[in-house]
Length: 268
Image (cartoon, rainbow, N blue to C red; front, side, top):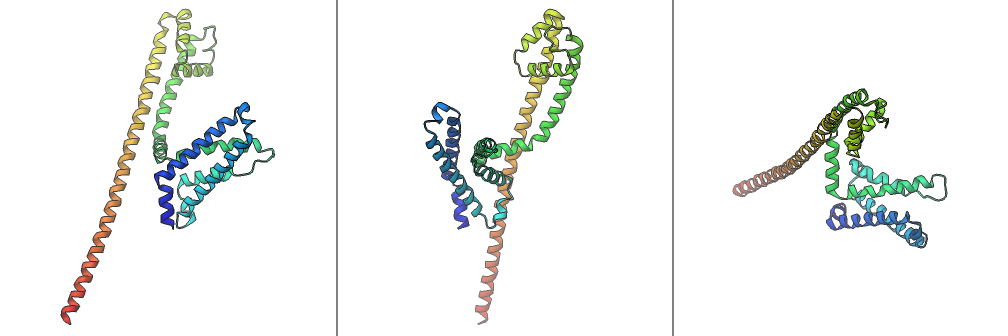
């Protein structure tokens, strides 16, 4: 029965049905934000919410029963994530003072789309493994921001916009430049008031912070994806090698048993 349940929960059709249910739930949540639509069809939306909630409970129950021991289900962090979302969002809302909080928590059911789709789980796993490298890049990026903020305050404090009055303002201004949000307006102001050569400050910052570091993030992500796929392939090879070794041992035992039977037959 456990093997049957495991095949059912891991079958592509079951995954696609779960994905469709979650997307339908996302649509229901979106419709509820439109009062002109939600009020006339409130009973329908409540019924859909109830049916989808029941499906979530049945789906995670089947997955739990597919394990030999229930505690084995909770050894996987993604399973714990699923269980917590389903358990918390199944708490009755009613008219308590926590009703608004519970309604907000129900939005997190959409995150179950990550755990349903194996491809999304793999992508999140890669991103988690890349966090240490990302932190190092962010530290270098902060150093660049810090240096340029100090230089910016020293050079452009006199601009009337007040974007460079303090170190904090300078950091926010650099973040605006980093995101390319009307950064040319900031640059042209300094060119008109401070110096026509101030463009060097902004262009050099963009080249270093935006282009170079963005490519570093991409390079780290590509490397982690490659390493993840290699590890996954190696795991498959190791698993196949394990099966081959077990088969060789079984064949050796059978050969030994046959030799024993032949010897007994000759002795008779």
